[in-house]
Amino acid sequence: MKIDVVIVGGGPAGLSAALILGRCHRQVLLCDDEQPRNRASHAIHGLLGREGRSPSAFLGEARQELTRYKSVSIRWTRVNDITPADEGFEFTCADGTTGIASKVLLATGIVDELPEIAGVEALYGVSVHHCLYCDGFEYAGKPVAAFGKGDEGADLAVMMKHWMADVVACSDGTEISADAARKLKQHGIPLRNEPIASVEGAEGVLTKIRFKSGPDLDRAALFFSTGCHQASDLSELLGCKRDRKGGVVTDSATEETSVPGVYVAGDVSRDVLLVAAAIAEGAKAAVAINKAFLLRDGFCE
Image 1 (cartoon, rainbow, N blue to C red):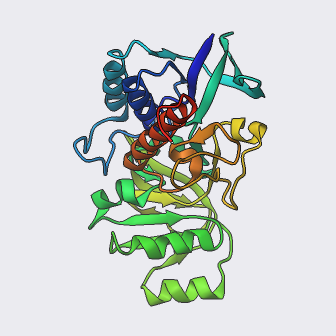
Image 2 (cartoon, rainbow, N blue to C red; image 1 turned 30 degrees about the vertical axis):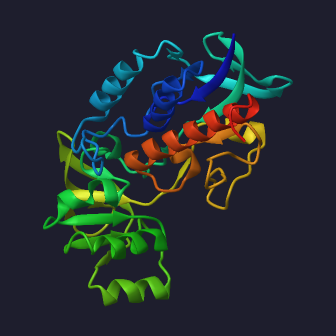
């Protein structure tokens, strides 16, 4: 198989790029392992025209829109390897698919590292969240908690005070710095530094945080700051330069990485982690890729 572009990842960024490239009559293969970052969430927020739409419904509609473009194919598989070749990049997929693509777009996203607390997974995406911009608005006027080791939870709690009045910082048995303690006091935020035993709730809705010592804490939501990591090691295998946060460094105008012909879009860049931004980055990368083809083929200078 020889194609123009292989897109790795079928989230908002990858689908957006596939749409633009399909409209440019480019031969595209989009490979998706069906592990979107927001699969636990019930709703997408901050996306104009689709506010509150479920992630699964949004992705289903986007995939359906792509069926109009016969030059775009989708395979439900993971890309295991990509290596530079004379004519572009050789790729190999978990389902045995192989081929050569002139350009590569990595839209592989990131994986959030959930707090290691009993009961978290059952609440994640409903009342345990990682993004204030995505979910903070819904908790105005409700009691919430900020979780993070050391200063991470304290810093998050201070930020959360803009969205919610009743915030408690939880450092899970770790100490915070004097500066962080000063900020918490300045903003009237209590600190619970006892180790957390579990979180409890029903039907995904948090009701209580239990500590290994000390009284329970009634809360309606918990936001956490525990980090995240790349969902794929393909950018590393290809030698793409990364920044200090682990995001792939790109040209701001084209989304091209330090490896010519390899582009990234969406959360893999670790920039603004919103669906709306991922869609825009996918479209931006697709336009840059098409312009590179036009330049190659003598249609523009």
